[in-house]
Length: 299
Image (cartoon, rainbow, N blue to C red; front, side, top):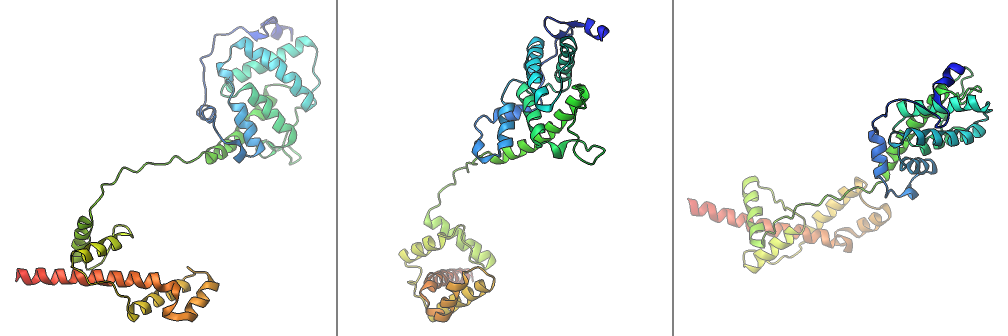
């Protein structure tokens, strides 16, 4: 013990060694950027881990700061885990040794992370991440050795639990809204021409967006190119048949469907469907007339 203590600056509780560059893991950096996370959506443990990660990392601290913080931190931790602190000289060596381990291997954690790790250990929230002991249970014990092995065991388990928290925290973030580029506005005449060209080429009546059928029908009617829309019995029958097919697929409420099917093709709820069918029928008839005229003209 005397040999080990001979290399320690008792006044600062730090071994004399070159300064380490500041180092942070990508996970810690990402966590620290989530300052506006709505912790109300997180579990208590996830919120606790998030709060701990927002402090300065060990890699950002000066050696003297680390030693002082570790000294205070492990005084309370030793009480929580039931560790009997030894005499001052031996305790100072333990503090320096743990400080070195933290600075070299856990520089991406904060001192608050270390405190949180042992708090979660005490209440059993790290059990799923700890190694299993000979009794088949999670190995939480320090065996009265507050040493590097015990520290690493706890902090490795904590980092696994922090990864889970990080996944939950990312899921709690509001999804960024992607702004769609402004779409050029087409005139009714352009929409009609585009729809007609597609119909002539494929024989299928396809509208870019649902309201376009009304826009095209209004344009054709205003230009005297389409007859006024009148809903026929055939339109109603087709709407009724479509509704029954949808109901068989489970698309409609069973209770409402029972009354609509009982009312038949004249059910009030089917009127919008029947009108749409009639509207498309009239547009198709107008387009068929255009195709016929073009064929006649080209003969």
